[in-house]
Amino acid sequence: MTDQTPDPQIHIHDLGQRARKAARALLSASTEAKNNALREAAKALRSRMGELLEANGEDVQGVEGSKPESFVDRLRLTEDRIEGMAGALEEIAELPDPVGRQLASFERPNGLTIERVAVPIGVIGMIYESRPNVGADASALCLKSGNAVILRGGSESRHSTRVIVECMRNGLAAAGLPEDAVQTVGTTDRGAVAALLKADEFVDLVIPRGGRGLVELVRDQASVPTLLHLDGNCHSYVHAAADLDKAVKVIRNAKLRRTGVCGATESVVVDRAVAADFIPKFADTMGADCELRGDADAVAIDGRLKQATEDDWHTEYLDPIASVKIVDGLDEAIAWVEEHSSHHTDAIITEDDAAARKFMTSIDSAIVMHNASTQFADGGEFGMGAEIGIATGKMHARGPVGLEQLCSFKYLVHGDGQTRP
Image (tube, rainbow, N blue to C red; front, side):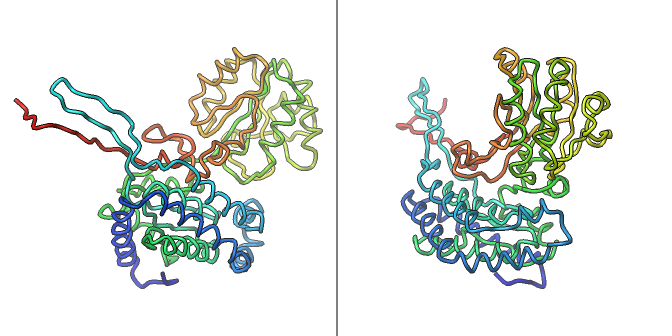
């Protein structure tokens, strides 16, 4: 757990061996022990809050002035955010244990009884960027689902990550579970990331959480199986039958509650039937808080909008900027969103249930919402306690990845002396 190591390959090999041993021990860990570890880790986060804030202050100071404010906001911890981290650990402790769940059971004509039961995946590599709370969420979800985890946080958050991991390991030790169930890569050498992505002998799954560059790096270089999401170019569509006051309120929240999260609305799609009424209302509400960039028709309606470029329709801003596109009806809106969305989260605002249903079934995104802020795209808001990420692929898991999605399954076959003819 040193700050630097001379050989990233050797370092990852050591972490992997220890994680594999810890994962085997977790297979027989009781639900009570796992829950105790989570509660003790939450206590440690609270008792060491001052130390964690000081460490985080070092991280923030290291990037202020060189990174966008949205990046700094994702990195920054406050007392409330640390309390939220601790509370999430306690919420996960209260959730049902996903391990050992019977997913199916059936009896064959020959008398064999076959069960399909949930089991841990094993060792998970978690690679993430600036948000230090991801380390706590990922550790907690992996622990409760019986998985060991190797964390590789961004170098910008290394001081915060160190304290968070120590708190998680304190919880494991207090519960009599192997501390190596939670480890962090102890070097900022990028060679360690490459080594982790190739560590098939020890690592069963790698999950990246960050910007497009990180996700594409993992996708292109990993030989270990991966669970990916790309950027969050999320859309909110104001349908012809929308309640415009509701639409303004919901989309303001979807854009500005936190601009640096992947569920933030980046593009507002407006039905031409209501554009003349909606766009000025929306511009009034956003005011100086958000720069609006529109197509030519939107700019003609309200001169406060700047002219959008082609790049705007494909951009995840993660800043107080939103694009505004006018479309002719529901079908054109669906076609536009399907073409430009990153298939993370998209929403429709309408009082027409049939239109909502058509939009929600036609948009091939991991999460599709009706009359709600896209910022509800979050595992905690889905009742999962927390999430390890939001998957935009279609295999194994899709949408918020919580406890159940961090399990695989195996078959248990019970017989009474049967032999196969």
